[in-house]
Amino acid sequence: MSGAAFDPTAPLTPSGNLRRRRLFSRLAECGATAAALLAVAVLAIVIYTVVVRGASALSLDFLIQGAPTGIGPELVGTAVIVGIATAIAMPIGVLVALFLTEFAGNRAARLIRLTLDLMNGLPSIIIGLFVFGLLVNHRKQSGLAAAVALAIIEVPLIARGSQEVLLLVPGSLREAADALGVSRWRAVLGIVLPSALGGIVTATVLSVARAAGETAPLIFATSVFDPGHYSLNPLEALPNVPVRVFQLSEEANPSGFAEAWGLSLLLISFILFASLGARGLLARSRRKMAS
Amino acid sequence: MSTVASPPLDARRAAHAGSGKRRKQADRIGNRVLYGACLLAALICAVTIALIAYQVVHGAAPAISKYGLGFLTDTTWQPNFGEFGAGSLIFGTAVSSLFALLLGAPIAIAIGLYLSLLAPAGVRGVVAPLVEMLAAIPSVILGFWGILVLAPFAHETLEPWLHDTLGFIPIFGPPETTGSSIFTASLILTIMVVPIVASISRDLFQAVPRDLQDGASALGATRWEVVRGVVLPSTASGVVAASLLGLGRALGEAIAVAQVIGAGSEIQASLFKTGDTLAARIANQFPGALTEMHKASLFYLGAILLVIGLASNLVAQWIGRRFGYRGAAAR
Image 1 (tube, chains in turn cyan, red):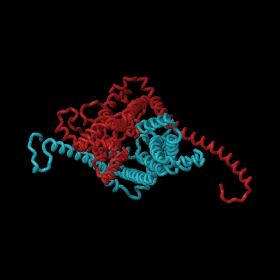
Image 2: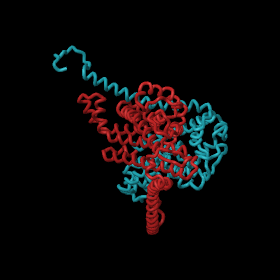
Image 3: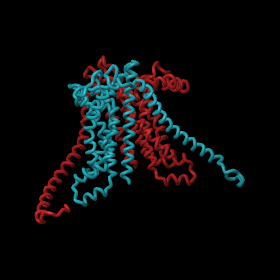
Image 4: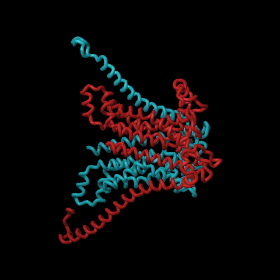
């Protein structure tokens, strides 16, 4: 552009190098947008397939009968397993979060955070091997073993999520409690914990959504079951949704596929609604805390 | 403290002092109990990790003492003859995960850029949760979908096309008889890796100071040049850490891979052949493993996976911490 005489009437459009740079930038923007669209499209395709193929399987009999007509026992079994797992994981997770925010010194906190991250990053199949070695080997499969495995998956999620909201509790609340001579444990249980409750519930619901679909550990802990009968006893193998889907998907049997699609639809809608609801709750409690 | 003044002053004082003492005692106990419970919970977590490592190594002990480190390179896996080696599985794990990361990381980073810098606020509020939803789909459902929808599509459309256009590269060999292949497994893993890397890198990009970006724009940089010159360099270590976390996820995924990879036992150049990974082999064979050595060998695979998984996680954390950005490791 240097050298050429300045022409005041020339239109103000880029030329030469600038035009190339602008074009490249525009292309990059399109690429990024396309990547986002691709991800959303994949999600849409997966959910669409599951909904369309699963919906035709759904009926009242399908929901409450045992195999071969329905999937009632699996639904109940998964609810029992996940319920026990959450009952184990929630107190531990919340207490760990409290330890991190209220009690731990710098070094201890770093160590615990590392432990939680490692737990979170563990492949779930390893947790399955662990539970097999600890609770199933030389004994028999049980819903309880499955619940322990899922609890190990849930604890770091609950602890992380709770810790984040506990950190948001304003320091002035704690100081006010101190100034009134309120003892530590009363302040924590009566003031800090209640004001973080929304976030803790959110974290728990998210962890339940994650645990409900976890399959790998259950293969070790509760995979030999009778899908035809309801069972509530956590000391024996319980029928459950993820393992059943896995088993049906490994058999090349069209009616089994229909059942698996139905199961997938129920599982995926539970998970999506739970996590969407939890997110909504979190956004609300964050706003409340911020104001 | 009550405002109802009825008993005489002394009595009130005495009662107050008594309740205060009792209360102090209760508080001391309460403080200790709460602290103890919290400490106990934290210890449980630490002990669990140690126990997991112990159980896995303990279960693998017979195989470790029989095969030693040669297990890692031996490629025979014949349960009927009692011969086990992890070579082909380590190969399958590495290839499928690396291919997934190679495919997924650029897409995920692009999504992160879109969500943090390009998207209007309204669109961002919709797209960001949707991308995270992708991570919430259970792996067993994704794998099932993979068998019935993705594998046929890959087999009938993608693989022939890749073979025709890029067939001169040996990894794109002729398509096989079914869609179960390392390639399909990699695609499924890509779907799992993308949301993880995307949401971490979005947070990273959002944390880049606005001033720096505005400064670059004021100097005449285009949007891409701002990204290239300011955003990416200042977050590079975090993005690497995020990718490593994604890699860790891909390495450890068992169920979905077991469903679509086809459980082959040979090392083959073509991505379109069947293969198997460490985690998938455990998931596929453990329920049917009859001999102790077979089980121990599967535990050995688990031990290898544990070491790789912990290593990739620790390295990700180390990079995140060492090179500045802490949030990446926090996830």
